[in-house]
Length: 363
Picture 1: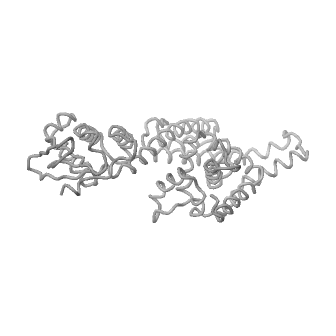
Picture 2: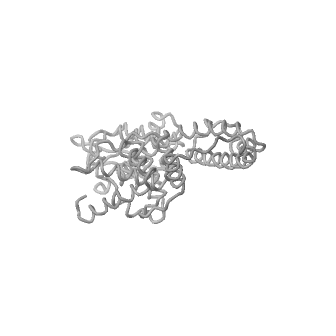
Picture 3: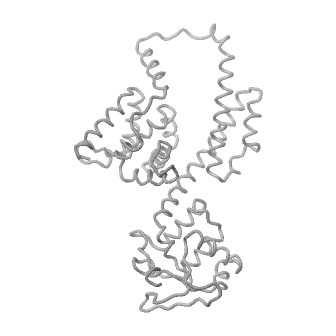
């Protein structure tokens, strides 16, 4: 029994308390209650650093009564939490429900134990780390969404259009995004308010055209202005992306690939889609120092898929060596996005270049 309760260790350089902070940070993503976090804190405090080395047993045999006292819970709560964590596959139990928990150490190593084993929790360390990264990203994104929601309410109010505010308040009656804790719900509210603003501002624009003709300034017919206007209008049209998600992944850098694999878990068959790639790109952009405002503006100008490809190519080139390497991925992304806005063939040429290098095995 003891042989099967050993584990492969935590990721290199990670301590047990760093591991606990990841669990604590990813609490909502993991679906854990505050009581479960308090329980796991006690569990980890009743182990030793050496228990988290590969090939060791990581277990504790503290009684339910002592766990309850240390965690500030009652015995029934502890029993329910243990049962839930066992069902989730985050703990293993080697003692029966009514037997006395016990164990021993020899030279710092656990020789035998009848209690609660943390090997399944340690085996999920990589997934927990990814969940913690996602939680941090969602926290930052949630702040941006709350700011955006407040601005949308202001924009809708300034439309002074009958029914606009009523439609907005149907979505969020109290107008207070600070009361929403769910990231998914914040995203839904922001998207719904965007739709309300777009619908009513379009209606107002249609109604104003009849009296704008006489007061509008004469058109600027300079050649330079015509070129800029025509290019901008052309770029506003969503151009199809000629690269599949599977091919895009082949061109991605290692950190982008990790994020893409994580977000693809929720997709059918675990295969990457443009939706999962866009989520990965947004998080990678945040990691390399691109602000959410800059990212959002580029998405509005180019579309989510083409903005994702710009980020993917810039991030990939930051990992290359030789004359094609870029030192600042964020600056390269911004330059590439601007070039794509002015000349829509820029990105296609860069992707073609990368594919040619890939086929020759040079990247």
